[in-house]
Image (cartoon, rainbow, N blue to C red; front, top):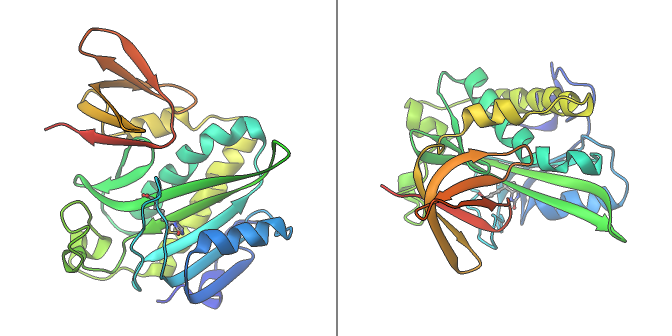
Length: 258
Ligand code: BTN
């Protein structure tokens, strides 16, 4: 079923996440529409969703392929500033849980917040904080999931990406998946607001701990074992000289070394 506002709001079991939906058939990127809506005072929990994006954006100025058949949405949240580090945990955990609710697939998280199935990327997350005078006004959590698409039809991602339909061999109801996602996002967000940390739950889902990885940051390459993560989401990298480097979530690319 299509994730139209009517289909989504039917039996949507949330209090505020997804209670207001801004729906587009096609648009450049849900991030811009959400940002503008946020500055106009849109309520916390407002979701911008599109069937297709023509200029989807990824992390590190990359583009995000967003044809019909996927899920592309941006959620407006107004978290307390001390809860910001948990937003990456919130989004990736909500996606893994929603995938497991809507399908019987197992999903893991590649630090900081790519969602993988059998080592291939099925979801990307982009979080943009909006500040005024150094004060956090709101944050936009962008989530793109490859649902009913054939990644082999897109040479630029065919080696590294997968989709739910490619993994399952059949199509998945996108509106059921979006609903499960919105429910999880709200549940986990309320946990954060109640003072609970998502750290342990997120850490347990990480697929790279103990692996040899390469971290690329602003042209600098560091190599080591992904030893652990800490409470603010940073990666602790054990380098070959024995030193421990703390890699802060940001414009970082991480590659497992085979
Ligand atoms: C990444 O892995 O680099 C992040 C990809 C984020 C894609 C989503 S799709 C919905 C929202 N709109 C965008 O333009 N980007 C995010």
